[in-house]
Amino acid sequence: MKIGDLAKATNTPVETIRYYEREQLLPAPARTDGNYRIYDDEHTQRLGFIRRCRSLDMTLDEIRSLLKFRDAPQDDCGEVNQLLDDHIGHVASRIAELKMLEKQLKALRLQCGGPESASACGILQGLDTAALSPESFGQHAGHVHGTLHAPAKRAG
Image 1 (tube, rainbow, N blue to C red):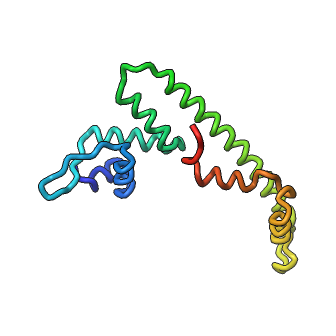
Image 2 (cartoon, rainbow, N blue to C red):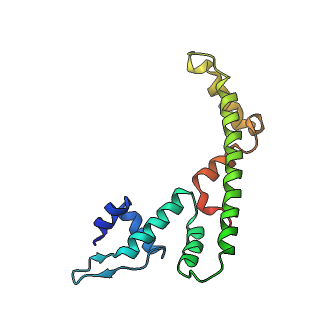
């Protein structure tokens, strides 16, 4: 099947498929005489595996490790268990950070009781104050934001 067919079959954008190939998560497909990529059922299954891992917020490095074991089914899966345990720990940490973020946002929301002029808005004033004094809304506010948008940078 061509890349567009694989994309439809797996509900994956074509550019994402190409990216996974560049990252060597998907093996290079065969090519036609016209240089079109031709994928088989193994590509479909592997891409489905990758997509399920990504839906669990696993990093590309974590997925590479899991694929290594998937490709060597005779190997002991102790490292797979450890990888998942580590990932669960990362998720638990992020949940704690998100709860702190929610608390900070709720405290900020309480700063404005209703529609007023922007110059009298307690939320805007609170954000200005927080910019000057981060501890007024917790020390981890920037850390939570960075974690949410860059999970691939996480060690492990």
